[in-house]
Figure 1 (cartoon, each protein chain N blue to C red):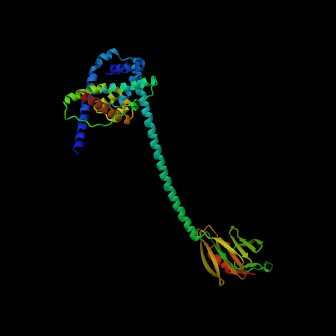
Figure 2 (cartoon, chains in turn yellow, orange):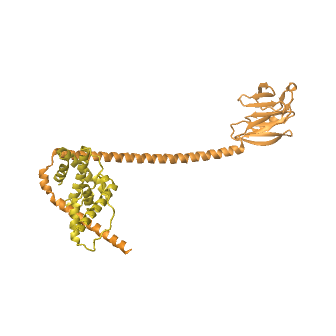
Figure 3 (tube, chains in turn yellow, red):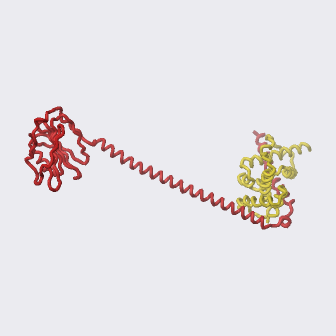
Length: 159
Length: 238
């Protein structure tokens, strides 16, 4: 069912049909390990999970090809914790929409972790699926949240 | 306190909204993709892709099977090692305990007993012979041997049973007697105290030793104790 989706995602990153097939084959192995977690095969959570896995493996292949050894987790900007003031002057729907757009603009490697976590996957499962460590999975989610918070507060103050 | 409670509450609300926003963002992004059917038409299944998928799955199965086999063997080997060590420990402890007890008993009893017969020296130039006034039927003197202060007389019968009489000239010596499997007692031979060693398993010869005049006499024989004592009591030493 998702052959086309997986090929599309892989091809969009790697731009090589044969390599894209290799990526899809590898993705099957990873997805197979968490088949029990996929309850509704046609839901957007399942499609999102599959897309995240393929994307992660595609970027690994891409980085190996371009010999890019930079660890993206090392370059994540350190964002200090800040107080959040929501309930005093907030329309919840507005906030939700803003956050949605902010999340969609986050870098893909952070976005994938956010999506998978929101879909109910544990950090262990996210780490195994994306080929990262448990610590990196938690780090990415934390930084995604802080980045979203920083951007959202910046937008709020700008209004 | 109230401020920190507010901060905590705000954080939880933000996290909850963040998760909701994440779910909605995921749904939007997936909806923005072409449908699965459209993508399946653009990227149809190919034999090469199917083969790669099957190869990947089979490779994964082989790796998993190998890991499982290694794990099983490791567990079995570890189990054997533990059992072997426990058995060795048990055996060694039993063996060690047995040896300890045996050694303790041996130390208590001693391997042999030492007799000190005194300090009298005597020239053997004036020593005569011994005479057996009582000789069991069939026994004849077959050999005598002299060595320094020791004279040995060997009597034997047709059935190869023997009586060995040792005459130690003078009493200036000590003698160690291995009395394992023997019972030791003291008897009187012609009024003189004698040391009697009786075999407890029937495989070792009986022995008696006592002082006669200025010499030490021992009689060693496979014959019974009664006969041994009778020989001793009827022994004349010249």
